[in-house]
Image 1: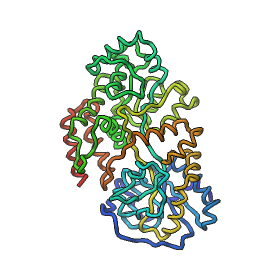
Image 2: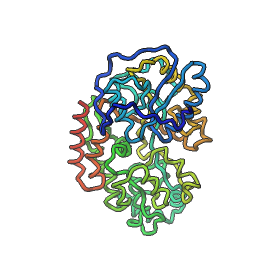
Image 3: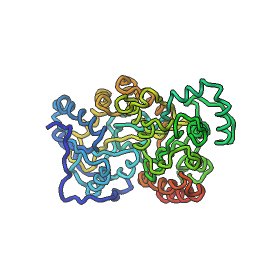
Image 4: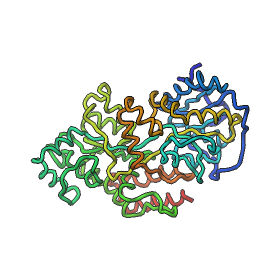
Length: 445
């Protein structure tokens, strides 16, 4: 049976829960067996581009190197919504049903107590920031697959027209004065700071500039959703802030954080983004850019290929371009695979993980639709996705990862829960940031 399309239900008898149970917070201990070094290796992934790409890699491994190793990999695809909670259930039960788990930078600290550190897998080909985001207590617990970063996606045709039409600059300066309190000239997107972002949002909005070719300057991913914290973090880091102080204390009740909230609330309250931003995330941002009603937005790198596809985005394909996030800081996280501490076939699973860590395996992963966390592969595969070289450059120059601790995943949720009202001006930034800071301090432990 081919791995592609293989969906195996988890063993019966395991009650699935709506939230992840604790898997412990202290890494260590032992369990499982090394096994014979051959046989079946069972791996969990989630469906979608990552699962589709991995299916092809698994097929190739089983037909080639796996046959030589006398190893067959069987992949279980769970749902995108529940994969992590189902895995946490298995981990809490110390199950040996799966040898390799699917994890991410934002939950590897939570799961570390149920994983074995990867001490023999070569991680030298990966982005250091992707590997660092999978370390907990100085030990690497997972092997990166896809890497995610953010870009400023913008209408190059519209921005170039503004830059090349100096007769419009006095009007732009007047809009900037009202938006940010400063007359400034328009700049190329690669040179924007957050004031330029705000001024441009006003310029390309009909509420501030009736002659704007777009209805809105931008769209904000301001829904109360943990993944939207990752986008807002770019504004925070780009404004000189971060989640924590150098000694690990919560650091959200700061002027930098207030400035980052103010970028969102200023744009939202002035109508330089759709009111629907309060419920927006990745898909709504894609839709706004695709419709041609919005001039630019922060978006995950995975969004560009669809927007540059003439069949999927006929109104804007070829007109959008990529620039670094203003403030030149981009959140980076990796989706990854990790070795179950309670596996009874660890040697065979480790052989497969070593195979995944090769450039050949990740080249096949890229060709199948993945975005591997290997800079050399992204550079070599530009013909597949023209954004690959820019992803590599952006992560290398501007990438950061948030602190890894057992409650990282919950921290993303708490920050979104505390700040989403302030992002859209429904709550003052000061009290919201104090609430977020107190929640983060508690989660840091």
